[in-house]
Length: 202
Image (cartoon, rainbow, N blue to C red; front, side, top):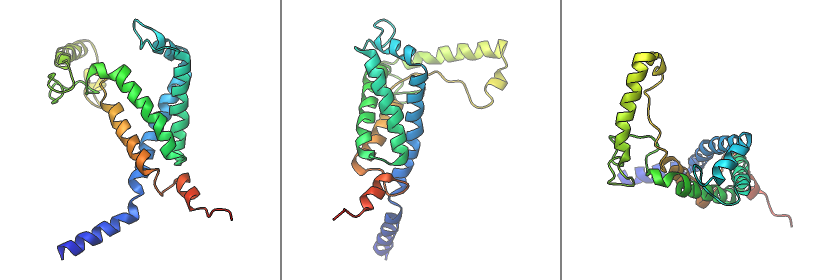
């Protein structure tokens, strides 16, 4: 009886197997569209950051790379939203996330937000241990704000945190894109699914 119930449960889930892929697309699309648009409106600053050896990434051909990144994020984000060529567009977006992890985030370890209570904070996993020093900086910032600022108002929507800028978010997006690469955009609100249903012209 239990096995029969479980089998029925699995069969019922197949009616909704396109929903997770739709939700992944709806989650990722605005993130990439926003990232691409931010680079468009700040193009010259982004090019300078990509190319500068001292305080930037020190990458060659920064204008070309920024343009390619904008195309991947902005156009790719719109295509994810539509579910159009989902598998194909997941490739450049995945590459963008890999490059971001290697060139921007890897030196900061795993954590996106500095959290001294995390398993990743003490240098045992993915990090050099400097996250622990963020506690002192955070306490100093809080004490200054409590003395000179409207601390209760400033923290009304949540506590202050210190950005660590590790690979956590980029890695998460990369894994989500891998799912879309292997499984496609799903059958809900997906141009790919509509195109696949078209009968071939005789």
